[in-house]
Length: 291
Image 1 (cartoon, rainbow, N blue to C red):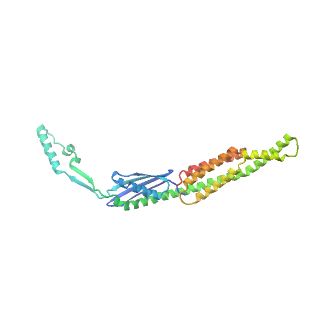
Image 2: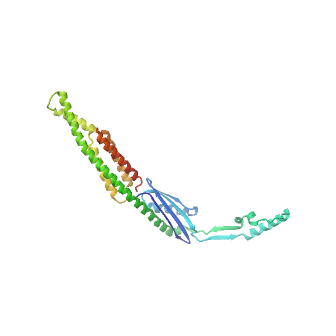
Image 3: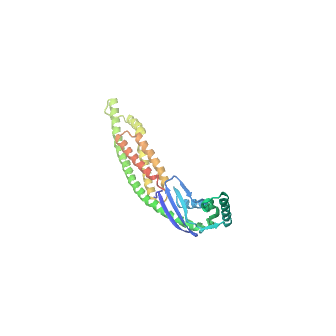
């Protein structure tokens, strides 16, 4: 069993520069990948998303890219000397015509960005995909290890809770048998009292018992609840993504528990079902983060 919470970062050489990658994952019903990368790298977005969705079954992933050093090498710096000369001559002429005594700060007046151009070297990010995908694989391994480590704790807690549920179901089964016996005795006494005789009218007893069984018999629900609990245990111990299956089983287990609580006319059984539902809710909270 794996958790859906994971985190990993990596920085490595790609092309002529260095690339930083960060991946965060949290719980989600499906497999959603949000890619946050520089606009010039947007051509990689679909590739990144597809690559991660092959590695993980469920979760919401936030992927962040940053070029720590330009992947296509340094920057180009060009100076427009002709334009700079024209600016300089114009400023000298202006100073003379206005009879300005103070010197004019050339760079602050004109602005460096007008005469000096800084351009990052370009290239094809797709051609660098092989190197980039290896970095993604490495950081994905970090994320997977963290998800697996947390999954161990989830599994341990799930098994503990399931054992409590199994114990409560067995207690309810034992209690329901004794309660049914007590109900039958009350019915027998009632019939005897109504008829004023010591001999029990078996036909009347069977009719009353059938009516009682239709309203208060919880045997079928207990069998299904016990079966779902065992299926749940088997899934928890299995490999692969089981979160959705566990979530479905929990819904069924809650449904059976609710029916038992509604049909049972015994305070002890009602309390056991309350305890059982509390454990099922704790299981549900944990399963929300299981892949």
